[in-house]
Image 1 (tube, rainbow, N blue to C red):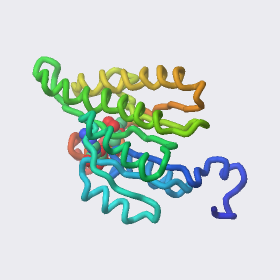
Image 2 (image 1 turned 180 degrees about the vertical axis):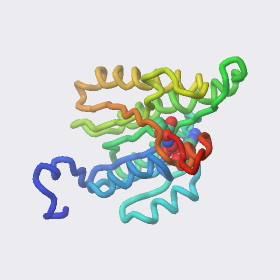
Image 3 (image 1 turned 180 degrees about the horizontal axis):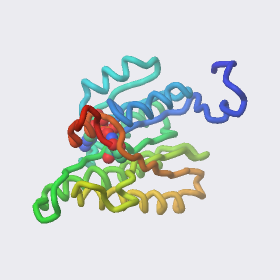
Image 4 (image 1 turned 90 degrees about the vertical axis):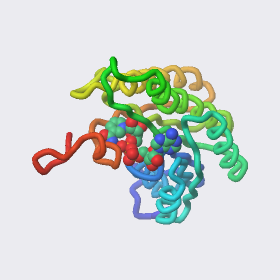
Amino acid sequence: MNPAIPAALARFLVPERVAIVTGGAQGIGLAAARALHDAGAEVWLLDRDLDAAQRAAATMTRAQALAVDIGDAESIEHAFDVVGGRCGRIDILVANAGASIRRPALELTLAEWNQVLAINLTGSFLCARAAAARMPAGGGAIVATASVMGLSGGGPYPNPAYHATKGALVNLTRSLAVEWAGRGIRVNAVAPTWTRTASSARSVPRRSGRSSP
Ligand SMILES: NC(=O)c1ccc[n+]([C@@H]2O[C@H](COP(=O)([O-])OP(=O)(O)OC[C@H]3O[C@@H](n4cnc5c(N)ncnc54)[C@H](O)[C@@H]3O)[C@@H](O)[C@H]2O)c1
């Protein structure tokens, strides 16, 4: 570890820890993966876009890429099995992959609603469970990427499934934090506001030369 790092900051290092970041090929997930990698962790980028995940992993010295569909229970279990099998443990999970289908409530189909639930809520829950089951006796850490929309209930655009699932993810985080506190597993959520990434650029067109927010 870098001896130039002050003692106070050294407390935040995670050497030898095994970290999984879902949706880690780009955007917020990749930023989280880089931070964990720079802090000493071995990082696994789990993403449905394997090519992008491999390109991202190649920019780090201790990173691996693995294909996963967070909307699919079997795919999640298989991916966590691979990481657990190769590393013998999982210490850190960033449950970050998310979906958004921005459509007014009266137009959103049941299939679209279910698709967003499957990734944002069920997928995050299954990832948290798969990680917790493979954490060492001393515990570990889970961070879910929620959204400011999960706290406010919405913004300027109708997006009911996204808002509902991000709100539920915040409360699921509280529930798991309480349930697993005794096992030393810390469970937290972050609630970003608009962040310029591929998906936000797609859903928020540039206006007057600047991208929203
Ligand atoms: N960008 C924002 O403004 C913003 C704001 C608040 C919350 N968030 C949340 O942050 C998270 C990341 O968003 P982002 O803007 O970085 O997105 P992004 O589009 O830049 O990256 C998302 C990554 O997740 C992967 N992914 C998507 N669905 C997947 C699935 N089913 N299985 C596996 N991988 C999948 C994609 O391939 C991609 O690599 C999401 O949960 C999003 O809801 C984003």
